[in-house]
Image 1 (cartoon, rainbow, N blue to C red):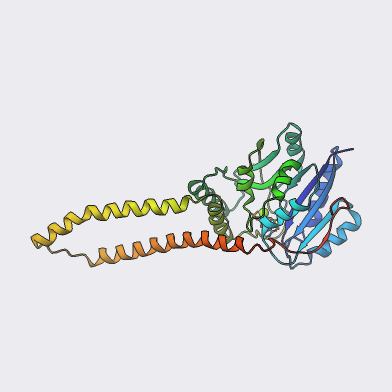
Image 2: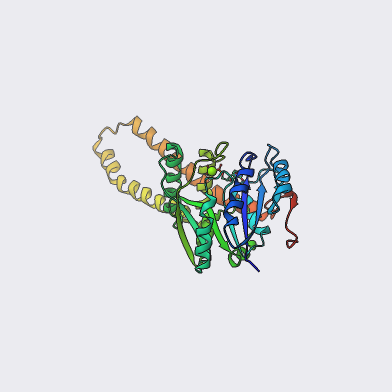
Length: 312
Ligand code: UDP
Ligand code: MG
């Protein structure tokens, strides 16, 4: 029996891209000696993507889908796909054809070579907009500086996971998983494959700068409590600085030197006010996470699904 490859594709308002990516994947597999299933995870789209998928299913027997009850976000859509995929390995990729399906044979080759995780790293691409490149590089700088994991800039959510790894993932119930980091954290034998991203086929990026910032903050705070330590160290530094300042103040008091400086006082108050708010916010994020997790709600809700028979 040929090995089964599951392809998981999160999709949010990508009706125009779905038939195209399904065809491209089908072409790739027609030249390979594997069986495959395509699991589209519709993340609460408002563009009737599910109708498009159902129409596609009339001609393409490999297509299955899961439909969320609302938009739960890219990471949870991928997680849902992993939870329901039954292949000997699972490949996750975006719906917009930025992750070229033509790279699939290479991923599979590395898997056959014995790697259990084959993740991809985006080669810097001149066509990518300046803003996207800027926000992406800020994202990785922030993440690597403030957390304990080391991610290559450009690590993408285009990766192959062996069945063993997928099974480990099923036991993860984080309310907001940060998959790139989690995969790195898991260990196993990993291989980084470099690829050149293509242009988005149709539609706009769903990751705004705001969503990227959120993902970065979330990535940092879900992997380490390093930011809390940073707050403590900062506190020490400023306390020490203020202690060193005391002798000067006493000297000024006794010698009657006029200590002027309304501006500097205001600046200091504003600066420390800001710093305290930031630190309070960081603590708040951790507390908020505990709150969200402690409610123990399901991480995503499936509205409807058509899945292969071997999945119960
Ligand atoms: N996506 C999703 N839910 C969301 C946002 C995005 O499922 O809330 C999907 C989207 O359809 C695409 C993938 O995640 O398949 C990556 O999104 P996008 O291409 O917008 O991100 P970018 O490539 O710009 O980082
Ligand atoms: Mg994209």
